[in-house]
Length: 441
Image (tube, rainbow, N blue to C red):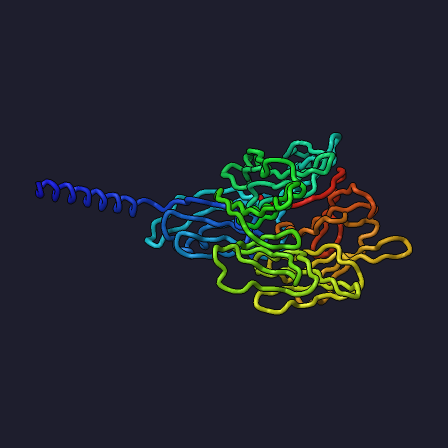
């Protein structure tokens, strides 16, 4: 009996050794290719291989068309491709991928078409209400959601796999939805590049709400705040991108915002802005920025953020928050700060400033560096940024997105695109909208 057992164990060990040898002799394979939103360049890709790769051979034998300055980062079987520089990318890229693993086994060369340009999504005013639509590359529009009487908030998931929407009915009652999407910006066949494909539309609340608010980070996690019509019905839930859910107990005086890189959230509190961890147990006291401040924009690759501070004498300041340092004041004045944005590295900051005059409110867009030195400014007249909308930066095409109208009193606007360096208008989409946002590819 023991002899038979010994033979069985020996046979099993031999099979394991044989499988290992076969695996070692097989060429390395690409297991996963996905856009990387957290990077310091204009676009990034994450690549996962079946075994540790020799990065220098990947860098030497792979290439991009058209030719763009780029770097290969990482080690082992996980590498990252980062496109550098500020040259606008106006067309899909062709990645010729080749190279060897650390045992000098060559992978089979392959080609991938990659369109890193974000999609323009608008809350469009239609005959029966409002509807989210995405602009195709040919300029036509594709519906993403049903038509609702009103849409009060639009938040694309940071990984491009959905859009969270807060809709309202005629009585002001709100509902929260998640329109799931399947990105199609990475294909081996160029003809398959397309806007994201529609998947399920999911309600995120069982019934009508008194209020709802959503926030997402670059991993695609979604934070949902909601409150019903009964006292004490307010809840805060974190829905992770892997489907897990977690209820959060947090005291706040306003809407919460997830930190782009994950792991934390910005909490408005009486004493100022507070940074809370999303971990099970916080090992340190939360960071607090005292004073009347509001979050303006995140600079995702650097951990920096731009804040708007309200002073008791009605002045407004713009501050750059750098991890580990006190907030750096970039601007102080009596103009209203209507919107701000920054590049991924937090080295360029844009702000729309407003001032009342005899002719109405004049608005100016300003480009500053990280010290507050003004590099460029331009009056927006006759255009006005729609109240409550954001100024959004597209690092791929180096352009700014604004929802604008010719009257500050109008509820209807259009999407305006502006060159981020020259501050010259480049395009207007002449359809009536309430808000325009970017959707990651």
